[in-house]
Length: 444
Ligand SMILES: [Mn+2]
Image (cartoon, rainbow, N blue to C red; front, side, top):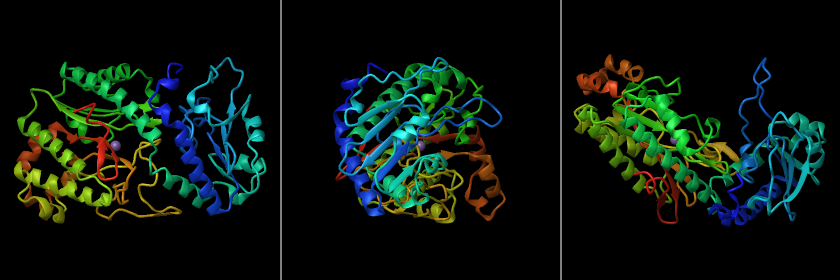
């Protein structure tokens, strides 16, 4: 990690990022009547009846300030003061301790290094009414925090809400992650066309991305043929020699993960399916082109259903398209997930369904329960656009015996079923009058 430092494009924006975080956090603290905020990096999660921990994941609220890895660190934020970073660096020979060095991201903090978790608690004391946000509220209480300061809901909601608007630093981190991921996607596609198995494609991807498996932002989805009809296909990946590859995998930079899906076809693929893939690519780009401030995300999601309905109509699968297919619910079994989600520290980032800065939920329509984004699009939001079209037996079966069955050419559905599904996913940053597609420049 030492090669990183000041040559990163992200580094140039980091001080502004922390300045904005500080301003927003101070405003949230004042509104909610707190003086100090303690963010906890978190504790390791130990598996039940075992002595092994799950790969550690930092509290996203902490990670959105500082890309310091590992458990037990604390960040103490207080109006008018430099944020104080308490770094836990044990003397250890079981696990190699972090080598802190002097990365760009230490600059804005008053740094205190302590040897263990207990001393981090002691060092993380606040001033005045203090809020704690982290996974160890009982320990925070044992160290003197009051009940009403333990993960206060409205304060946490305000911090989440602020994370809907990405800083230049965050965008640069996601762009760096995208460069790495796109390079690895290219290699994975090549391996697929050479006949590799799902597991081999996964290994080719990891090698090209230069990371271990648990450094991916989410478990890779690498599915050949009919396996693509499982939306989160993450089994042992034994299939090989496929005609269709659905690959959904990202990469991380400084804690920020991109989320990219492509669907590739081999020359032996059914031409009917290959045409659908090409048409879905055009639909995805049309949906991207509609992204700009002021548009409700839900409108794009429903528009995706209309366009997919029309595509199925022109392919002969449905006897009607567009509005009628959407109104009848014909497209839902073919496109059974949301059009996209916020992206950031978390792959499904926070506040996509948040109703107001202080909390509450704006749920999606009952017919579209998996839509994760119900916000109206605003500048600096960053989200995925990922329409899908699948042939999923479990969802189509009830339709075969329903009154809707007469709208469907089942012989074509049966012909397409072995091809699995299509998903094409880019990451978009919303600008003042439109958007910037972060993925396409690197991966057509
Ligand atoms: Mn996604």
